[in-house]
Length: 453
Image (cartoon, rainbow, N blue to C red; front, side, top):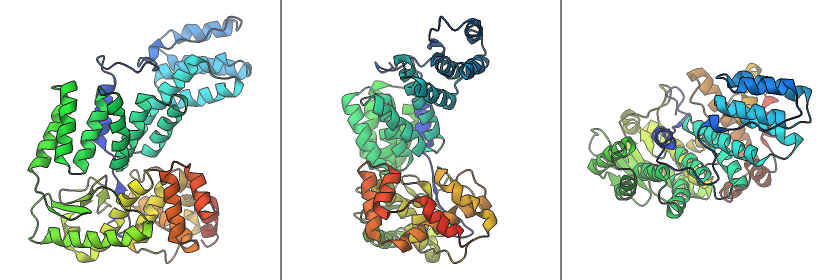
């Protein structure tokens, strides 16, 4: 929630989980799944193309040097001259994989697929690049895109353990701990040696403030990987959670001051949060299955223009908690994110997530910016984070998110919203869920707003 306008919030990524995955992913002691390609890109082999001639041979020779990018461009040139020969783009994809450019691998394999079905090695190469890129994007705060890549792998390899890990991890980053824990608990039940899954499960329990579950899961991880850096870091966090005061709680919420608070503040925050909970439950037709933790004080890990954040727990600065005028709308805003994390299974677009949080906190658009800012209407659907924006840009992003959401909510009732969230929980593709529930799409909504600029 922005300090200047009181209408913005960040969904902060779970950075430690990214560290855990990167740190453990390349360990020699961790075997790859049976269907997985080697984690060493240099092991990928070029397809054979015995009739391609000297140009092919020259590109192959360059591919054996330390400059895979140059080789990729040579194969790209050959692809342009031989548009019906799938060997050229497949060889290019191998070179991009060796260079670590997984976006290019996937784009090249898409071109290859337009020529002919992918070979078994190309299918595995696509799997490899989807997973590599998916974990990087999720760790960088683009969990929605990372989850899409994991789900794409599962289309080809339904039992792929790494893809299931990626999907669970992306839900954890979104703050949707129950969804993440359901996926990852099933994964470790079937594959108990999954170190990364155990580590993320510990983090999920920490975010719920559940020291007992965190301790039990950490014991499993410690038995598999004693003395590791990850185990040591998590052990410190579990110990800190055990030492933390229980705080003040009811059936839905737990409020904990993580620094010195005035007497009675926890109870005041709990009462405000409970009012917000009772407002949101009928508005969304849903409520989280696990209590939501509200941490008062201790910082938000958000940009300077944000006054609060939600990352599976609500982080509420002490000065905001002490001011009832700020506390009421901010808690409605943050708890909307907590509700949506589970109500939409982490699949709601960022603009709608942020727009609903502002809408339910009571904000309404009174006037629109000038037409020179209309580009934000086009950019919002593709944005997966606002964390990279400065304060002025963030204000426009949130302003337009609210404008489109307000337009939608004024055209429909909360029953349509409940239907939309239910479709997302059932796994329906987001654009289809949107059309099924609202009978419209983002383009029509934005055009209505553009007409008024």
